Amino acid sequence: MLEPNRDTYRLHRPTQDLSCYSGSKISTPEYDEILPSTQEAIKIKPFRVADEKTLLIASESKNNKQMVNAMKKIVSNSVVDDIDVEKFAPHDFEYLFLKIRAKSVGEVSKLKIPCSQCETKNEVDFDLESVEVHQDEKFSNVLTINDRLSFQMKYLNLEDVMAMDPDIKQSEMFNVIAQAIDVIVYEDETINVGKAERKEAQDLIESLTSKDFEKFVKYFELMPHVRGIANFTCSNCGHVNDHEIRGMQNFF
Image (tube, rainbow, N blue to C red; front, side):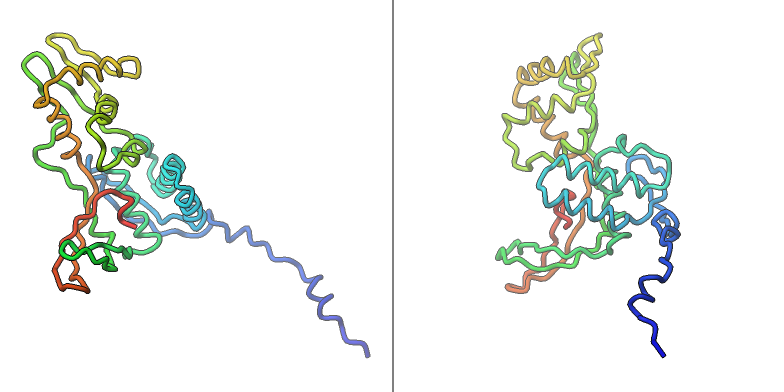
């Protein structure tokens, strides 16, 4: 009696339809979060493996624009509410991204942080859930130069913020500042600053005294930002560190 060919049997087995297991069909947990700047309640969900792949490819590209676009896509896909993420303040966006990442991959991020005493790099487990948005009580978006001239500032977009060098030269600050000026009030005249007026705004900034220019520098220093504190004891010298982490790229 002939035995059935098992390979043939396998080839003729009906294929299973996996469409019912697609990402849109799988139940995903949702979490409540609060936008720091507006205190608005929103819901977020973990990002998918496909989103993580997009982020990884963007990260490896070292292209700032590609990285920002990947992050925008992830946040947009992970925010349940009908909200335009493009309108988020940079610190709100960074805060949400870190919270989404914590819910998706895990709360702990392994960082290598140098000791402030001996500079030995220590591997530190940092809890992403401890991240907060810090806003200095002295921060204001209105910079008054004198009783005739004042500037109303706006937040830079996410791409500009991520591209900023922490050690930016003062000569390069003029262009950055001009991008952040929303309105100029001179005596009784109000000027809305768009691309056409940006060069004029930059010329006006360059005409200020060093003392007045320092108000713009202070604005960026005090601007709300995402931060976390990593507490660790150096493995080399035993020094107890309270290391401030600032800037989203430094949390990974």
